[in-house]
Length: 67
Image (cartoon, rainbow, N blue to C red; front, top):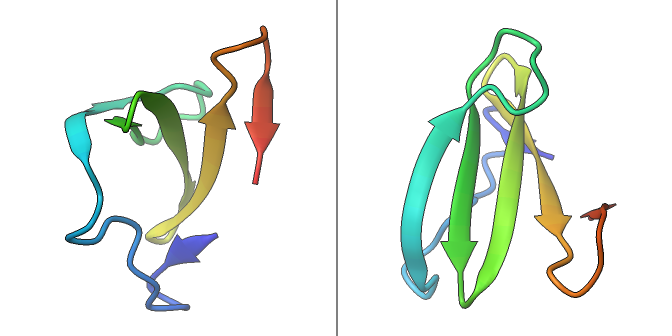
């Protein structure tokens, strides 16, 4: 998880971000972030209080892998 408590950067200058979008993916009322990086779709779930949890979407299979 990332956010204001850990001060860890989610995206850095070496990221090859093609696009970024915000949407309420898990329908909890908070905007989550979706981005494509080197052909891999990633989702940052907004847990509240500026804390996000990264979820990677496995493009080779149906399903979501949490890291």
